[in-house]
Length: 77
Image (cartoon, rainbow, N blue to C red; front, side, top):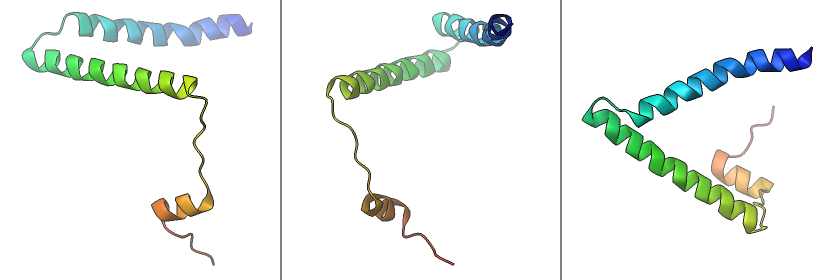
């Protein structure tokens, strides 16, 4: 039963993904072509960062000092 439910949930995702790819392959205007180009470059950059992070075997360390520096100290009641 779970397999059938998963198929039903996956169908809208695949159809919207297919529509997105179809629109990217045949952009209608100059602005649409520019947007597709920029999004493609960003997608390649994010994929490159993910590959680098995966193969570098380094994990990002976050400690309380870094969080306080970025977000500010937490307020205590």
